[in-house]
Length: 196
View 1 (cartoon, rainbow, N blue to C red):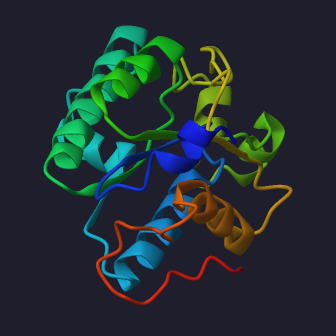
View 2: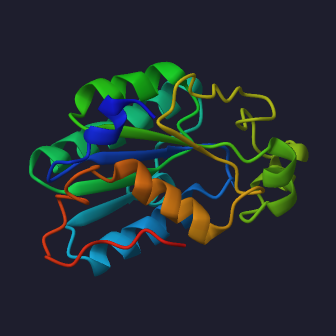
């Protein structure tokens, strides 16, 4: 981890951006990180890509529509961050250029690649999307007939076949921990435990 990455979240707000294939575990880890931060008094907002799509039902799945969706969520995340809110976002966000756009919008951006292998994501198929894509009901499905561009230099990589939820959460919290002030953005005097 670079010194810059280690120090960047010693502020009152930041954007944690979870990216990875559908079914990789992004949302599960992100939700657990949010619960942990809220328990310790952090003002945090969780942005789930699927939930935001429900608000904008006309958002499709072409490359241009996915790119626009990621940029919209990124803009929202940057505005919340600007107003002192700690943001945790979980989106497939398959394209490197749209993630870079979001990174440029945010002051303290932490990119977390949930790198669970494609075969495991398809085996889990929590939402039934892989099965539908295999039957031809979904075109342009990320990982099947549309590419997922892994981040070349993420701040953190998590493969959920190799780590438990508790360990993944702990690694995220260690990633954002300021080395001297122990999560300075926490509004309580109680130190945050990052043990799994």
